[in-house]
Length: 103
Length: 164
Length: 288
Image (cartoon, rainbow over all chains, first blue to last red):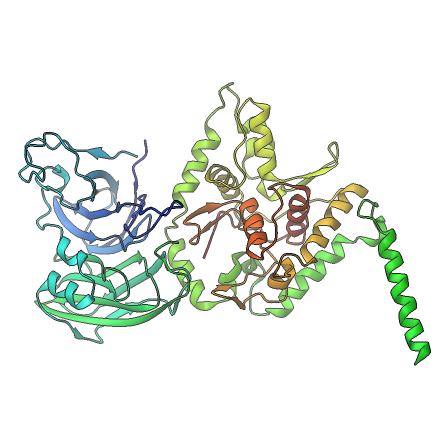
């Protein structure tokens, strides 16, 4: 099955721009369903980006981040064809990871 | 969707002692020793900060200091959010030695929305999409050179983003 | 005074008489329906009202009407939240049915790049056929259960098909058949007829007030309004079909919605698509 993580990493000059879109409900735990019962919190808590064995960006998220979360950042360095590893873990302990090539 | 549920044997932080192999359900306590993907992650998830109601308490829990407003922090946010469920917010700054960037929404049930670690070599600029319960101040806090700087903007929300 | 009231009475009586004799079943005389003139006037109304909006931008609905919203939309379009629904649609579309056939076998050009031709008037059946209807008929013809017209699956499928037609101009045809003209005219009349407790017609919002607000929402212009279908709405936190939008809108004006794909909605879609001929398909679209 396809990963929940979509990544676009593009090198522009000496900087790699990274955009990620992740498929995840990001339920905050404050919303009730049609029956009036609270939908339990279910959201990504930590998201990491690794390049060349080092962290280039890390996110701590709460339920206030939108569903199917998106993030964009840039880091100096990166070479075309190199790998960028992206991983997340949510409050239920579920994880996903993917590796994208820098274009 | 390839989500893997890691087994909990060998965990150093058994929440339910002697309960055997029990799944943790939304308790927010992630035993990081287990997830190999996070072996490199140095910091623990700032759970306490995410539980705070006010932004002042959240910033204190997260950083242990207070922020001063700075025009060197540029917060990019809409005047009126088209929908509170998905509000695109970004920040960029000319400050040097940035180590952390956080976003807070004062009127959200828990003010802290997201906190980002900026290692050396990463550009201090982040864009993300957040939920806003109602018209509120959006605050971005930048930790640079050990000090905290902030920028605030009021974003009007007509259709609340917390559902219902 | 007497003459005037007499004339008024007489004209009222005449109108009543005409109405009494004009039954909805009567075939509309071909020479009174002029879709070509309609489309031209429709387009001119909007381009005159919004001279700064480029013709192809009308398909972006409220975003073409409001600068602040346009910026938010552009940011989200960089990596749109509807990517997942679109991928699901592609997966669904390419997966064969249990009998080994697939959607490709039901549509011209294997279903790729054809969305701009829907709806069309089926002369054998004598009715308008929309894309959603065609998809379900394809399923049923191949032994599969039909999808709900208002749920995620149909939305994902039509999203994929719209995506393969992105940029292509709407190309709705009205054959020289009085039934087709009647369907077109029915759609047009539906569009301009007030309904519901709020007594709004589609035109009340989308012709009289585009760019203005109804409560919290900025209204989209009717020109190009279906080009972005299906739409990923922040309000729905998901992708929704044309059927979903028609039915929910009717509920929102406190009317009783028809069932999805009832004749009224098919004819409405026919009319609205035709008057937007020439404008590019932009689906799947994002909306507030």
